[in-house]
Length: 436
Image 1: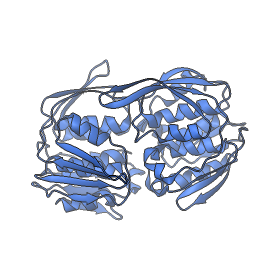
Image 2 (image 1 turned 90 degrees about the vertical axis):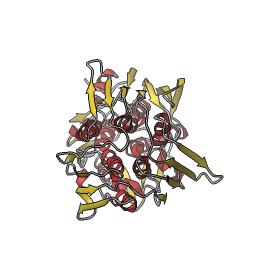
Image 3 (image 1 turned 135 degrees about the vertical axis):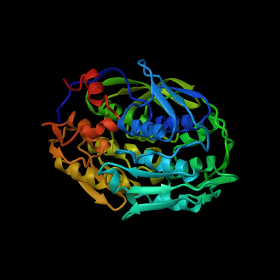
C-alpha cells in the first residue's frame, strides 16, 4: 500500500483499546471466580489470541453484538490442560504472560507462533520461571515452538529484573498468584505498571514499595482469590502515537484523539514530542478503572531535534519507530541511545527503521544501542519503497505516517500485520482526511 502527501488533518477520533490492559483483562478475568465484563477491548489479532488461549484452558469467554465481552473465570489454580497447541500468532506479550500463568499450574502447554514471533527469544522469561519449578523444552535459541510443564505447588521467587521488562515482571507476578508464600520482584528501572494496578483491582494482596532511588519492590501474596470486575479499557497510547505524530507533521492539522490512556509509565512519547516543540494539549483528564485517561488535542508544529535520556526508554519503548519518523522531519539532529530492547521486538526495530528511513531519503547512522537521525528541517522527504517491514506492525504504521509528509509517497510492502494491534488504522486516517 502506498501513502501519499496529505492535506491538513482534522477531526476527532478514538484509537483501539490499550493492548497491554486488554491482554491482562482477559487473563485476570479468566482467573477470577464469577463473571467479569470488559468494554473497549482491543479486538486485534494479538488480543484475540489471548482470548483463544484462555478458552482453551477452561474460561468461558463471549462477546455481545455491542462489543461487550463477558468472561466466566475458572479461579486461581483452576486452569485446565489445553488439548491443542496455543497459537499466539504475533503476540510476544500473550506468550510471555501466559507462560507465567501456566508456570504455577500442574498442566502442560505448547506455544506456537507466526514466523516473526518464532524468531523472538524467550529465555528472559523461561529462566526465572524455571526457578519456580516450571520445565521447558524450547526450539534452538529458546524460541517457539516451546512446550512447558508447570509446577504445582510452585516455589515462590525473589527476583531482581536484569533488564527493564514489564513482560518479565508480569510473568513472574502471574506465576505468583497460584504459588504459596510471597513472590517478590525488584524493579531497578520502572516499567509499565498495568499488572500491579489490575492485580490489586481484582483483589490480589499486592504491595509496591518505591525506594529513594526509584527502585520498585513488588510483593505478592500467593494463592490469591480474584474477584470479577467490570473493566473499561482506555485507548492505547501506543496506537495514539501514529495519528499524534501525523497531526504534528502535516501542515495545518489539528486533531483530537479521545479517551487515551495516560499512565505515567506509558506517556514518554508525549513528553518527548513536547520537548521537540510539539503542541499537545491534554483536556478532560479523568480516571477510569484506576487508570488516568484524557483527550489529546494535537496541532501541527515545527519540531526540533532531541537527545532524550535513555532512562525514558521503558515509558515509550513501542513508540520509538514513529518517534524516529518525527525526528526525520525535525530541525537538526536527534540522537537516540539505550534502546537495546528494540533489537528483540517483532523485528530488529533499530536496523529495520534505519534501512527504511534511508530508503525514503533520511540521513541515518545506526548505533549498537540506538540511532542518529538528521532532520529535514520540516521539508518533505522524497519517499520511496517498498519498505521492508519484516512483519512488524509498528514499522508499517510508522512509514505510513512518513508517507503523509513525503514528496512522492511511501510504499509499504505489507500492511497485514497492522491487524495485530490497530485493525482500524487506515479507516482512522480516512476519517482525518489523510487518505481517500
